[in-house]
Length: 125
Image (cartoon, rainbow, N blue to C red; front, side):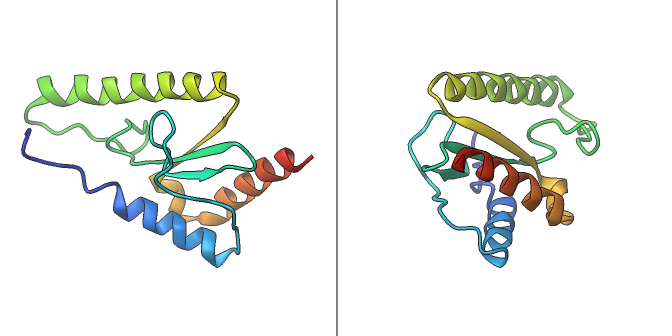
């Protein structure tokens, strides 16, 4: 297991970046040095966006635990969920807003774009 390295969540991040570009949403950056390493950062709006994979972050609809090595996977997913809460609290304490987007929601991107646009509009006021 230790030799398996994350690919940087590429499929979900690249899909979300393409959705942002298609909808002409600008002002975002990637790879910013903030707690939890948000996938996308809108600095002016002080908004950190995380695109969470359904398996890795324990989506209640789509996360199916493997039949083997459950003594590893169940605590692993639980730690990921606990870490997500801690990172959210750290960012909020530093004055950032946090938006978490599930991987499965990228299949129908319009509600995601509407939510993001709403959050960005609120910061412009």
